[in-house]
Amino acid sequence: MNWTLEVIPVPVGDMDRAKEFYADKAGFAVDLDDEVAPGVRIIQMTPSGSRCSIAMLQGLPAAPGTKQMAPGTLQGLQICVTDIEAARAELVERGVDVSPVRHLGESGWTEGKGGTWNSFMTFEDPDGNGWIVQEAPSELSER
Image (tube, rainbow, N blue to C red):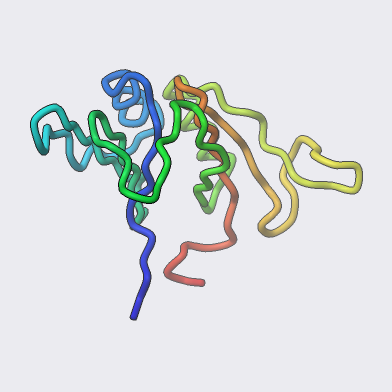
Protein backbone atom coordinates (compact mmCIF):
# COMPACT_ATOMS: atom_id res chain seq x y z
CA MET A 1 0.00 0.00 0.00
CA ASN A 2 1.31 3.48 -0.87
CA TRP A 3 1.11 6.18 1.77
CA THR A 4 1.21 9.44 -0.13
CA LEU A 5 1.59 12.84 1.48
CA GLU A 6 -0.92 14.92 -0.45
CA VAL A 7 -2.20 17.84 1.68
CA ILE A 8 -0.57 19.85 4.46
CA PRO A 9 -2.72 22.22 6.52
CA VAL A 10 -1.20 25.69 6.88
CA PRO A 11 -2.60 27.79 9.74
CA VAL A 12 -3.41 31.34 8.64
CA GLY A 13 -5.29 34.22 10.21
CA ASP A 14 -6.71 35.83 7.06
CA MET A 15 -7.73 33.40 4.31
CA ASP A 16 -7.94 35.99 1.54
CA ARG A 17 -4.56 37.53 2.39
CA ALA A 18 -2.97 34.05 2.48
CA LYS A 19 -4.59 33.08 -0.83
CA GLU A 20 -3.25 36.24 -2.45
CA PHE A 21 0.26 35.57 -1.10
CA TYR A 22 0.42 31.92 -2.14
CA ALA A 23 -1.19 32.46 -5.57
CA ASP A 24 0.21 35.83 -6.61
CA LYS A 25 3.58 35.88 -4.88
CA ALA A 26 4.58 32.24 -4.34
CA GLY A 27 2.97 31.13 -7.61
CA PHE A 28 0.87 28.25 -6.25
CA ALA A 29 -2.14 27.11 -8.30
CA VAL A 30 -5.53 27.53 -6.62
CA ASP A 31 -7.18 24.11 -6.73
CA LEU A 32 -10.17 24.87 -4.54
CA ASP A 33 -11.72 27.81 -2.72
CA ASP A 34 -15.06 26.71 -1.40
CA GLU A 35 -17.40 26.76 1.56
CA VAL A 36 -17.69 22.97 1.93
CA ALA A 37 -20.18 23.16 4.80
CA PRO A 38 -21.92 26.09 6.51
CA GLY A 39 -19.14 28.27 7.97
CA VAL A 40 -16.33 25.94 6.77
CA ARG A 41 -14.09 27.33 4.02
CA ILE A 42 -11.20 25.46 2.46
CA ILE A 43 -8.60 26.90 0.11
CA GLN A 44 -6.35 24.24 -1.39
CA MET A 45 -3.29 25.27 -3.42
CA THR A 46 -0.44 23.39 -5.07
CA PRO A 47 3.11 24.49 -5.92
CA SER A 48 3.98 24.05 -9.59
CA GLY A 49 5.00 20.46 -10.32
CA SER A 50 4.13 19.18 -6.85
CA ARG A 51 1.91 16.24 -5.99
CA CYS A 52 1.42 17.67 -2.48
CA SER A 53 -0.87 20.62 -1.80
CA ILE A 54 -1.41 22.96 1.11
CA ALA A 55 -4.83 23.67 2.60
CA MET A 56 -5.95 26.68 4.56
CA LEU A 57 -8.98 25.96 6.67
CA GLN A 58 -11.52 28.24 8.33
CA GLY A 59 -14.27 27.08 10.65
CA LEU A 60 -13.19 23.45 10.62
CA PRO A 61 -12.79 22.03 14.13
CA ALA A 62 -9.69 19.97 14.84
CA ALA A 63 -10.10 16.28 14.08
CA PRO A 64 -10.48 14.06 17.16
CA GLY A 65 -7.07 13.37 18.68
CA THR A 66 -5.36 16.32 16.94
CA LYS A 67 -4.50 19.87 17.97
CA GLN A 68 -5.31 23.14 16.29
CA MET A 69 -2.26 25.13 15.11
CA ALA A 70 -2.17 28.88 15.60
CA PRO A 71 -1.44 31.05 12.57
CA GLY A 72 2.29 31.35 11.95
CA THR A 73 3.30 28.27 13.94
CA LEU A 74 4.10 25.96 11.02
CA GLN A 75 7.84 26.02 10.33
CA GLY A 76 10.19 24.12 8.06
CA LEU A 77 7.93 23.16 5.18
CA GLN A 78 10.36 22.30 2.43
CA ILE A 79 10.05 22.67 -1.32
CA CYS A 80 12.69 21.39 -3.75
CA VAL A 81 13.68 23.08 -7.01
CA THR A 82 16.35 22.21 -9.57
CA ASP A 83 17.63 25.78 -9.97
CA ILE A 84 17.63 27.69 -6.70
CA GLU A 85 18.96 30.91 -8.19
CA ALA A 86 16.16 31.01 -10.80
CA ALA A 87 13.61 30.15 -8.11
CA ARG A 88 14.91 32.96 -5.91
CA ALA A 89 14.78 35.44 -8.79
CA GLU A 90 11.18 34.45 -9.51
CA LEU A 91 10.12 34.89 -5.88
CA VAL A 92 11.88 38.26 -5.62
CA GLU A 93 10.24 39.39 -8.87
CA ARG A 94 6.84 38.40 -7.45
CA GLY A 95 7.50 40.48 -4.29
CA VAL A 96 8.42 37.75 -1.78
CA ASP A 97 10.92 38.71 0.93
CA VAL A 98 13.25 35.74 0.50
CA SER A 99 16.63 35.13 2.11
CA PRO A 100 19.85 34.91 0.13
CA VAL A 101 20.86 31.46 -1.07
CA ARG A 102 22.90 29.79 1.68
CA HIS A 103 24.65 26.53 2.34
CA LEU A 104 25.88 24.78 5.44
CA GLY A 105 29.65 25.15 5.66
CA GLU A 106 32.38 24.41 8.18
CA SER A 107 31.43 27.43 10.30
CA GLY A 108 27.65 27.17 9.93
CA TRP A 109 25.38 28.88 7.41
CA THR A 110 27.29 30.70 4.66
CA GLU A 111 25.90 32.79 1.81
CA GLY A 112 26.15 31.26 -1.66
CA LYS A 113 25.46 27.90 -3.22
CA GLY A 114 26.87 24.75 -1.74
CA GLY A 115 27.35 21.29 -3.20
CA THR A 116 24.66 18.82 -4.18
CA TRP A 117 21.64 19.04 -1.84
CA ASN A 118 23.33 21.89 0.07
CA SER A 119 21.75 25.11 -1.25
CA PHE A 120 18.82 26.66 0.60
CA MET A 121 16.75 29.82 0.93
CA THR A 122 13.88 30.70 3.23
CA PHE A 123 10.76 32.83 3.23
CA GLU A 124 7.65 33.37 5.35
CA ASP A 125 4.00 33.88 4.50
CA PRO A 126 2.18 36.94 5.94
CA ASP A 127 1.33 35.01 9.14
CA GLY A 128 4.93 33.91 9.76
CA ASN A 129 4.69 30.29 8.58
CA GLY A 130 8.24 29.45 7.52
CA TRP A 131 9.29 27.77 4.28
CA ILE A 132 12.63 26.31 3.17
CA VAL A 133 13.52 25.94 -0.49
CA GLN A 134 16.27 23.43 -1.26
CA GLU A 135 18.04 22.82 -4.55
CA ALA A 136 17.76 19.21 -5.71
CA PRO A 137 20.10 17.76 -8.36
CA SER A 138 17.22 16.61 -10.60
CA GLU A 139 13.45 16.43 -10.84
CA LEU A 140 11.78 14.01 -8.40
CA SER A 141 10.69 11.73 -11.25
CA GLU A 142 14.36 11.30 -12.24
CA ARG A 143 15.66 10.38 -8.79
